Image (cartoon, one colour):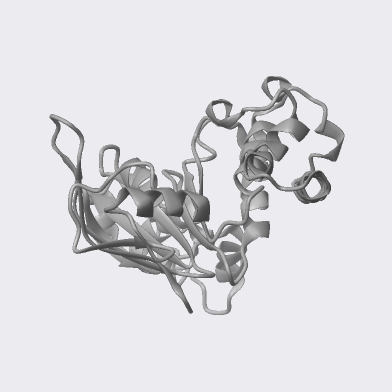
Length: 277
């Protein structure tokens, strides 16, 4: 698979502050869905902004996204065309007076012909379940609708990388499910997704999870391997998905369930398996 994110020994420090990233290595290929986790202050959001070309790295052995060098202004500008970034608060990303205008903003700025813009807007409205909201003012939408609209706006232009920085942090359970379903529907061979989250139940969908600690990579591997490392999970203050919590509590009470289940389906299957005590 084509490598779209190639980061080696990445450093970043805010003016007058401590180093937020202190030598991060990260490679992500087209089609990969990678979750990024870590305690507050570990550098997750800083990494998201750097990947989106929104900040200049302080230093790096290599800092390329979609073949663009993030160490140069030209490279960061080019990366911003290839990388879509969605933040916690969608209100900060709305530019149109209604949903339809917001989705059309990016293509209009690039000078697309009107018929192409309308076709793209109609495609996004249908794809994100926003057709009945096309004339609604963004600030009147529910939390989940706002974030889906913001996500559709990010993807109005062709993207090769999608970076989501805790996109469900401000949502109720219903809105969270809406956004997660929309993200799952985006998974395809040509798009790399980097999903920053503090919700461990959201990590189980990822193919890989990268855990940051004090601006460095503390883990890079399968979600199941991370959650099986109880000492590291505790050290990073991460917690585990709810089904895993249930399994661990059952284990403490003397009921073995085999491999640590990360989903409800896996927990039910483990409890129903022959030989479960």
